[in-house]
Length: 367
Image 1 (cartoon, one colour):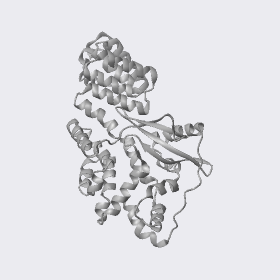
Image 2 (image 1 turned 135 degrees about the horizontal axis):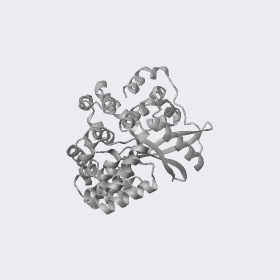
Image 3 (image 1 turned 120 degrees about the vertical axis):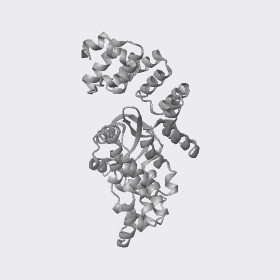
């Protein structure tokens, strides 16, 4: 946000004119589908330049600045200095850190307009982007998107950062949110903790800051649960809790509530991947038959998702069905280049028995 603050001081004197939104028309469903597939591919590659080119910067920027306490000249200065790298650079850092794969899940209808729904999938969790698209200058363009984990438009999130920058007279503190975001995205926890101390209090309580803190808390179950419970108190009813409540119930070993939270999320997204969450919850609850049913259903529905095969491997070991466990390991090795070591397998329930089984030794040989 420091770039935007400097823009107010340096560019406002040049007198740029605040542009009007360009004329836009709706895409049809086929066009939205094609755009969503292309955009998901760009997200998976994290091609920052191509992602920026897919966005109509003027429309996005005007939405971002709507309601910000600036006159039109200063808004024009901010808009002329705004670069899409400000948005996609940090996001791509997070996506790479989590080895995230983006896939078009389907096209949804919102107020009669088609919007691509893109799934962002890592090994253990999913998030969703609902893309608001329009035809501008004859080309399909992204004008905004909603992140389902916080039910917030990207332009609203950016506006919070600008407002925090403007509300704090200390430029070092006003820049702290950007520094914290960069440190967290890079995985530098020490740097992020230093920057956190300089973040203005208003921004520190924001859902955006909470999302960045989650990057570190996920490494420690006790910290994660404490952070979620703090968020529940500060932001009761926040849509983010649709996702976080699943983790909270699991950490508390509240298995029926965890399954209910998954079902509630699935009513929103209709995503077969969530069967992997159900399978893992049922496995931890000791309901092995139910766990296997969910794992098998996911493998049948989306065989290209590694999570279904991992879930089937885990529950097969727990059931001491070593033939099925080895079959899953072969799929993981041959199709997904996943090859857990003997030491990793030995740590899992049923793992030592699997390693000693005739089925495993016939495949891998004795230790």
